[in-house]
Image 1 (cartoon, rainbow, N blue to C red):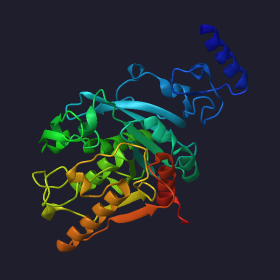
Image 2: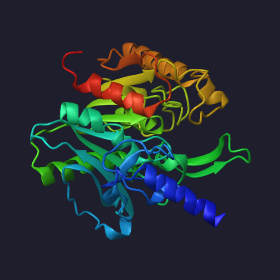
Image 3: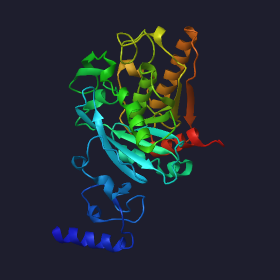
Length: 348
């Protein structure tokens, strides 16, 4: 077995001898863990995205709140949590020609919390449109389970049934200071100060679990510096209605219908093929969420239509938008490219 492993490593080394450099694949347990490459891309052996070697620096070697942003990719760590007892990793990409007025986008990963890979999905477009990309990574160590991330910490003390298909009980946190929504402006402000940026707002893209966070941000955290919010391919929604209990509705939550503000630009950014035929990602099923539809596309459309109806009944300004992106399913890379073009291509 050992000889076979060594032979495989030799063959991999020979096949890639001209590709040595600064890029590596994330540790995967295969012989290609020992290889380096000269350019970014995909490892030809394990098919994982290649990242810069220095992006694998252990967090224990980084200093909390020490923000050192260089051209290209990297990461820094900051304090998180209401009592600053947690750690958030920020994966970034800084194009070489970034200007003080260049746009900033924060990219929220899906349930895998893989901020580095989501950041990488934006690199090509970041260079094209000269965008600073910041992708926060909320690790399971500090933010366990879906209620700490997808639900932004808005519920605690969660009990799950034995089949793990539904919550049997939970406590609603009505202290907004405990929600992760508060981190985002701080991440932007810290970065803006470090790079002497003159822009006063940032854009936001979140996919799957990240999309769940963002549509809830638009409902529950109105005081923010976000310009445009793209909530992409969420698994299920908190519909802004007093007729349903939180978390599928507003009843017993922090706010009620009459306090809603639909004037912020929230874009429901949905993949046309994220439908009943899509098998990627986990999809929550329960009578409460199935009312929204049986797949992500239907649920996103339902959320948009119900929200528009509620805004009309309240006689409120409604600036939310529904965008269905053709020929894409539950694919964060393709949705990221589409999001960059949607936000920054002035010729579209």
